[in-house]
Length: 319
Ligand SMILES: NC(=O)c1ccc[n+]([C@@H]2O[C@H](COP(=O)([O-])OP(=O)(O)OC[C@H]3O[C@@H](n4cnc5c(N)ncnc54)[C@H](O)[C@@H]3O)[C@@H](O)[C@H]2O)c1
Image (cartoon, rainbow, N blue to C red; front, side, top):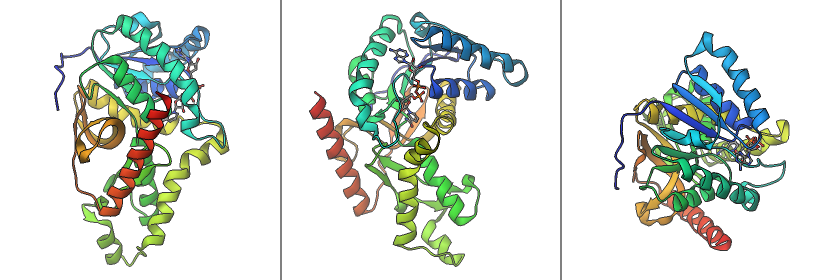
């Protein structure tokens, strides 16, 4: 994969969309001291100013970032531009139901970014994230990987949480990914899940914990339905994605490469191209630096290819 040239950055982040998700990301970045400068940009200037002031008032005791409400001209010289503008799901809606509205918003956002863009990685969060990442990649015309989406990082985090709860262990010792679509076409990669470096089936056998298809289906179902469940309970999700974005932002801004299941336009990995879906990827200063071609079980490949076909068909239908 062609790598983008990266110049040492000034740790500046722009967040487009200062709603629940954008403001939570700004707050998480500020209190974790990930960035030096954070600018919030939204068509609702008054609300954005209020969010920026509210977060700023706590920074002196928790962080050092310069955080303010700005406009698109502030996208110049950013190391990272995060797109969260767009409507969220209502109870009962799928992420794909947001396409028509959010693609129009994305079109306006990308046109405005392009006027001032000088450098940096673009991270898409707005839903449907796989579709919007594909369109942003097409419209920005940057080297592959410089535009990517949060994809299945949140699903993977929920998956690890469920396994930790089942095994009674800390999330820190569980390693596992969900790949494919951030939506119904998500695929848990059970064949690669480890607990303290031990394959999960072997660990459960050793600990006399039940480990069969029923347990796996139950965890996969919980992981897939978690977003809808939270939306039914509190109308939106924002804290979970904000902490996942912190991990990605830190890897980009502070040059601490990480591995996460994020979406980017595939270039022949697993024989797939011209569609943005999640696979475990090395994320660092130039965005998705490498997509990892690990081997999966045959039924996992089948589910992944089903997700590829369904997202490809969806992309065709909106062309
Ligand atoms: N990828 C994920 O894992 C994940 C998780 C949670 C939410 N989301 C998505 O994030 C998006 C935002 O969710 P939210 O809860 O913050 O919604 P929200 O309604 O609270 O905020 C959206 C913001 O976008 C702004 N906006 C609209 N058009 C704009 C434009 N042209 N330029 C700049 N700003 C504009 C609005 O003024 C609003 O402040 C949704 O699409 C949601 O589905 C993604």
